[in-house]
Length: 590
Image (tube, rainbow, N blue to C red):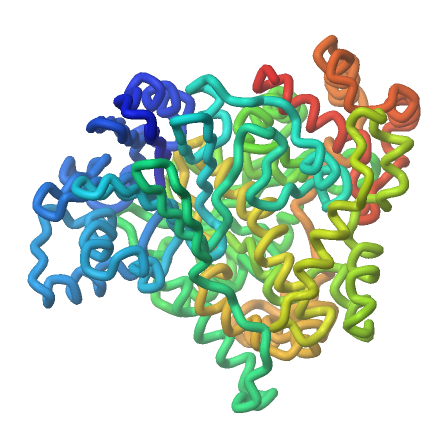
């Protein structure tokens, strides 16, 4: 896991290594173990290194193979790199390192851009072909690793974070009005390729982008999970099949030349990971849980369950208790770590958790993704009996933060668009073939968009803020493919994730399986009061916010007068949603 950056020129000028160095400086936390830049004519690549596989200098990047005529920068981990290495050696390739990075280089030379279909892992990379001048950018199937792009006449830049592109300079930082409507409506998610800024786009998941020396860009989507039913699998077989795929996914993610721990929330997802590692003979596994002070009558931890799991499997467990003295100062630092505005209060939990975890280890497994692939959220059951032609309206009613018509009373007129762009986006996705039921259509959309730009991005941004690599076994592409084919009724059973609960029975303690679904509780954000409310008020009344004028003053005043009652459809704090966006824009001097 690292930070990558690059500049490509199409105007007969040499690429600027200084711009790449500025991007790398903005990503120092992602790669505290080393830095490298390689510039050759119109192409300059840069890399910040977090050493996980091949800790020696032979694994450093940018990695060049002069014999093959290729240079690579890569962020992520290829879990099956050892078997691919053996296969490539069979074709006559020799290796100068033991890194997964070099496997990507050789695999690209052997199979071209289609090499990505052979990788089991998370990745974002760029490869330059010395002889043709082509550059290929690619992102993993589930978008676990990020890749942002900024284009201007004669030039393209890319980086692992949006703020890194801003650090390089010459970026159009005007706000994308369509993205703003998505932020306010689509659960604060801005679907790829857009970001909140007009001048920055993100490469969508499962996409290969080929850039030719004249600046021509061609994108190709190389993967999508199929939601068509598999009639050859009996209902009783699904739990065992799911168990075996998850077992393999967890085993794959132990590949490292450093110790691997687990973020243990006490929910079924992370508890199942711990149980499978214990089943595989892992001893002395290090686990971590976090808790906050209660606020507004809401508890701030789930230690009872994480302690139960830690005791059951004999882990070396760390409880991390966050008091008010650490919480408030961490808010601004968390915002600074965000590549895009992320309204989830879980961000602060992950930021503080990662800060402490990074003092012990460099790699952790985490349970993100299970709810999106196995129907664990509250908006899926209401779709179960909805006819396919009514699915868009039903989904919007359950998931959208507010109806489009409400925006006229919340956004200033200059920032409104005259159509419901989020509903149009959902309708276009639901209209595509291959998702037979309303639940299937919702799960497909959520796994391709919401999952990528909410929980997955949250894990990447907050762990990498402390040079910690987060791995998500529930997003192993083979497990995701299996889950997609599973009948919705089995996923919706038992209050959601029913098939997972069946698979876990006898492996995970029943008390964890049968508990009410929990969330990362951060009461200090859900219930704004005291210094935290003052911070929110300052952000929304700052000169920059006043000059920008995104929100109608009367709407802001109503929220400030009653900071904890107005909620979005799914119960998030409306005031925090507004304040977070302004805090992020102000942090990035936009």
